[in-house]
Image 1 (cartoon, rainbow, N blue to C red):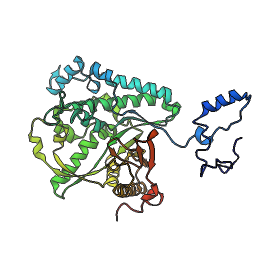
Image 2 (spheres, helix red, strand yellow; image 1 turned 135 degrees about the vertical axis):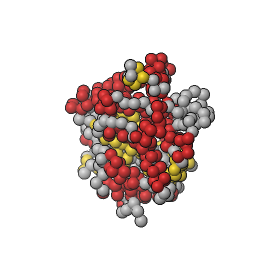
Image 3 (spheres, helix red, strand yellow; image 1 turned 90 degrees about the horizontal axis):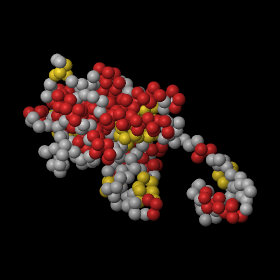
Image 4 (cartoon, rainbow, N blue to C red; image 1 turned 45 degrees about the vertical axis):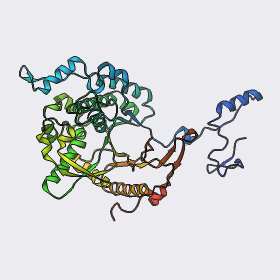
Length: 421
């Protein structure tokens, strides 16, 4: 017999449960229940369609690329580097500043860009009626540096002295090339969505950045300039093309011929290609000037920044205010990931993390109350070695059981009154 519902609460509940959120498990045992109906010879079955399950109030935010390029594409043409001979030959001309007929040679469309757009098209076509937010790439700045400069994530490319454990790669120019190709792939996918699907599906498309806040270590003019330079390299490297159509001047100056150049058509394609900006933020770094790095010929992006950094966990509000000031308040900003790293110990006895989330959510509230186009936040779920976020996944338990940090630990409604005491 189906339970009578009064204000959403079943009147008939199993005696072994204190509340009815589990009940008879009809959604987990549907095949078993159907077989019981067959065995008992039932000819009809009355059931309810759950309003909250059919039309949930959770919007899907789908990421298309999260560091998971198919190995076949890496093997065929080098993935985001596109190492086919024609492509690399023309990039070699760019590196040497060689000109053809008096003009700087343009790079052809890379294979990874075309394949990514084809993949995105399948996703838009098959899932677009249920997806309201598309994120093309997760943290492309971190992906390029970790995968092609330091070599600590796949494809593990780097060169000495920047990544001594790598056996192939070039830390000096590959991160710039990979990011260049990713930006063009994003812009091409965004253009496809807007032309072919947006009018029908009414979704939004954007990109996700890893963004620290960089503060000057001292009030010295050199450190203040160093902090801005670091922002230009870490954030502006991607956000400037998306908002203004080109890389920051200081990035082009310090990287020189190692960073590709956008054509006029490519610049127009990239500029304005995001409906929203998603931000992953973890820490604040204090920055000191180290311009002496620029005296070295063999440099990577970190050396091009010409700074030293120290870690300090504050600055979310300052970062959001910088986005508003420098980029005209990008539309529909989203703090997608924010977390405090702790070692896995199987418990929730971690007061420092509660205090960290308390302070950061307070900064978020202050930013929301200011005229910033910000929509929300999502903490990071636990990783394998370190723990981050609100939910502890107990990998050693059956079905990876969950333990949740009480949100009320952060104060009423998860916020405290102010980010600054």
